[in-house]
Image 1 (cartoon, rainbow, N blue to C red):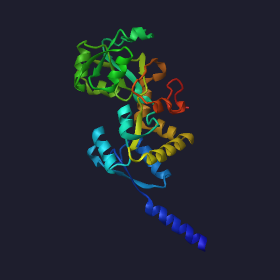
Image 2 (cartoon, rainbow, N blue to C red):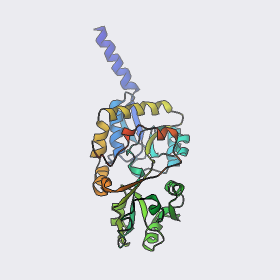
Image 3 (spheres, rainbow, N blue to C red):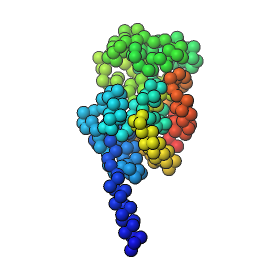
Image 4 (cartoon, rainbow, N blue to C red):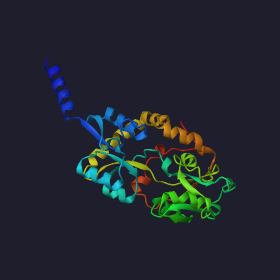
Length: 283
């Protein structure tokens, strides 16, 4: 009897200590991050539910999310990593999208779909000019690798720049170009089918700078999820990921690996199995 009472008291203590995991994103949103949050709650003894701090308003900019981490309004957030972000928050060294955000496909003019046909060497790639945002981290990566860029401060300007011939292609993440071709119908756009640029620029979860212990706790859960196959199941079942991989046909492209000089040693040392390999596909 005493043993049963003790177990009941322990269960009660755990339930009292558990709290909602305070996260960004919208309630009910069909996104990989939300599926992962739900699995973290299932596996953690610290959290019993999800609470979306921003509700249906959508996520603010990174600066605001860092402030909300520091003030305790969020337990965790997600953003593309950088040396600056890793200095201001506690990073969880696990690539949420398994490196897909660093895989770039070119938007080209629909009358120049052969722009990359036969481009198999880096000097050929360097002869072409990429449209880029002036303050985008990708721009620094491309230029550090000798890739020419034509820049603008505003994203909407990229499409008339491309159509007008100021650049030869507009590198986009694998999730982006197919929807942009539809959304930007006034421009004559197509998605290149020959080449992929690839560099290390993963999306990480982050906790507050003052709470590295929580980052370690969640990282342990993510590693456990990957080890037992749960993470790969969530990844390949995600609608956004599945559609991007189906349309992009990454395995059929010439891959140019570029160096990102702005990643930390810890990011470079992420285990290889966490990165998606387009030549192997789903295992």
